[in-house]
Image 1 (cartoon, rainbow, N blue to C red):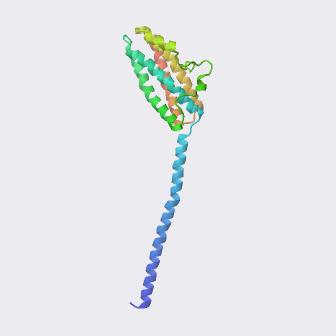
Image 2: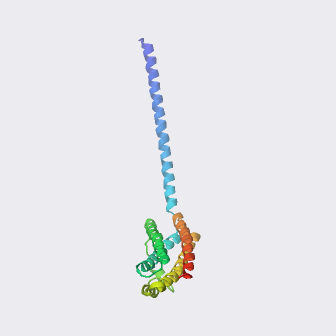
Image 3: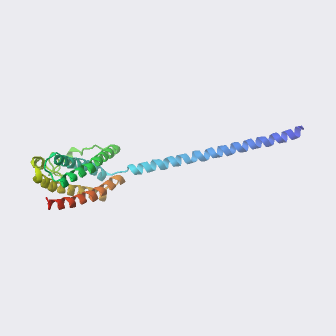
Length: 211
């Protein structure tokens, strides 16, 4: 090959190599440029999902002992004899619904870095004793003992009376979360509590007239 033609071919080959390298670098830069934006969007979405306020925390902290007491009341009915079937079915239904909600509430409080118990000063509010009977719908120690001592139809009637009041308190607490809460999943749970427990209140009132 003549020297001039060789040089021309070499120059063309080098130009192709440089062009390919430039395209490769351009692609890398585009990828690098898009990564921070994607990462930022993901972080922003995570922060938005984790956003919560004081109403969310209070809802979770107050609903935990409230649900726990409802389960305790239901357990009492499930070990008694001569309880109407409709009432034992209701007690099982309450346990099945509120047990998983307790786990979810505890998970949220852990995620938020908040304690599962309310600060002690909140327990010292007027009208609130050591077992927080001042919380809306909560039974006192005397109420719980009366339910433990009752038997048969008397126990069923007392359970219905107490649980109606208990549910009404939960509905009021859940409504506060719907009105003031910020964490989307907590607000959704509050809506479910209002709907489910209002239906159970209606069922219990009907049962009171048939026992």
